[in-house]
Length: 79
Image 1 (cartoon, rainbow, N blue to C red):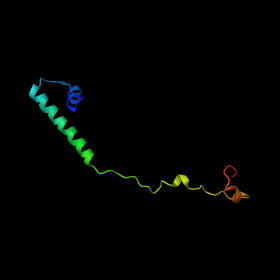
Image 2 (cartoon, one colour; image 1 turned 90 degrees about the vertical axis):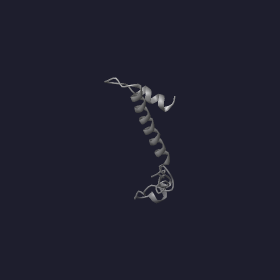
Image 3 (spheres, rainbow, N blue to C red; image 1 turned 60 degrees about the vertical axis):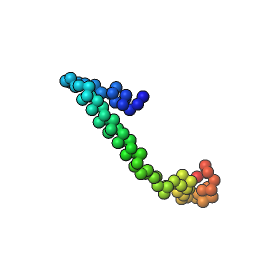
Image 4 (tube, one colour; image 1 turned 180 degrees about the horizontal axis):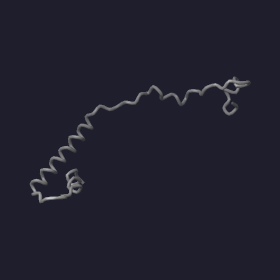
């Protein structure tokens, strides 16, 4: 389904009796606005995500102070 068909299905006349020419003009303006918005979206520069925090998952957690924690810090499940 083309953009024009989608616009035509979404429109409904609430009041008055517009002529075919007036309806065609409204549809043309809306199609133009849709096309302008899509082309502006395509031309917009991409927002890149910072990779500053991407390695946080592989970093070790904080050390828990206490008796035997130094040796337990290298063995998961013993702290």
